[in-house]
Image: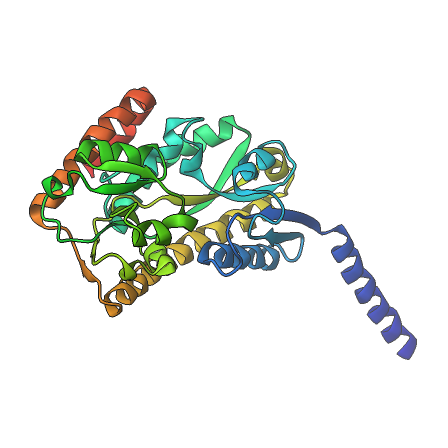
Length: 324
């Protein structure tokens, strides 16, 4: 009996070692620091996949651009250099306008509205990714973008002539529509630009305001929720097709959990960021009726411009969103 026990124990150890040896391992490049909530959420997603697949699929996250730089992640997954990755999808709107649907200014101005817009766009986004050899897994929004100023703003007319930090084509277009003066400033230079008067206003999330301690130069934050850009996790199609049904189910089930968990975290952090701004003396409030109306007008103009680029597919998305 003792020998039989040793034999059974040895067999169990052998099976465990064999399972470990044959487990598939995926590297998952991510662009943001390990402490960022997107990266933490990705790590939880990876842990979930390992558990739900019974150890058959091991995903190893590589945050902070340590494996591939942010702007290289999507291409790396498309070409199979990495089997899975996370990327701010709107950064690739130049490849396909549909990738920028989440960042049309003042179209979806709350988490609920952002979810409705994303729901309307998701099938088209999945199809566009599929054409690029990618399988969509999940997405998580960033906190909403707000308007920072050094004076009270009641309407778009109050913005005229203000030096406005522009960091991409969309923010430069907003400046143009409002009669502001766009100034190209990177995030790392923001605090100095505000302190020296090179910039007097900008649009970004509460996170940027807290990181840059903008209360040292500015006085007001208007929670206009201009847009809620999303990070998307996708898998190389060949890698995904190579999984068995249980592995595919593990990835998708854990992705659904990560989507909810990530958005809940984003909502929680949004409130904390705004609280920190207020605690440091900034006036934090929603936009007044006239300012809100003016900004929505800019959004309508920029939506029309986006529709010209996105064509019939874009029109179907916007129609579906507005119908809800």
